[in-house]
Length: 199
Image (tube, rainbow, N blue to C red; front, side, top):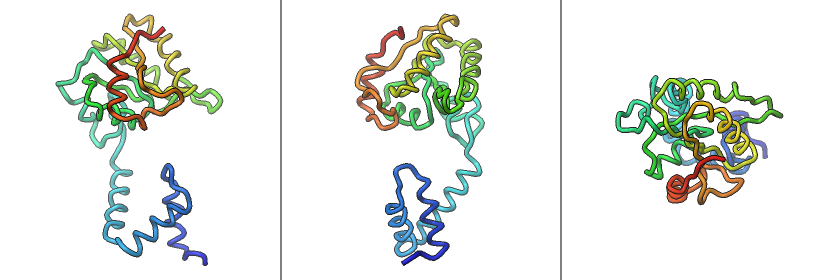
């Protein structure tokens, strides 16, 4: 039996979420409609509000509804350390480890020439300019260990060398080919503690 147009539209809309296929989306949609309409209405309101009001921090480019995110506004962070990550989920994963007290720069992607994603598309010129005009002494490359993440790290290391900053790469415990956002806090903490010079 086919769903009504509105139910089908809800199912298809839920399929846009990562890891949610048609069956999971159908189960979610029916749960909202049959058992929890109030929570569904709150979810719709929260999504609408977030989509309309959340943008990117003007300094680090993570997600926030403010001009500067709470990390960039904090005076307790170390200005000499800058961690470069691919996306806001990576910032959240690192923050959950509780080990890192520096600043961030979010690339919002990684280099992928075949997909037309070059240095300008992920903000590398902005990053280099930020470092040139700041107190940063060490740049920690925390891109993923995928082929694209590694290529991005090598490109960054090459372009950071003339700026006279120490460039390190997170290492221990992060699985090869793994995405940083799926790594647990203890593993991330060990990766930061065991980082080495980028070569």
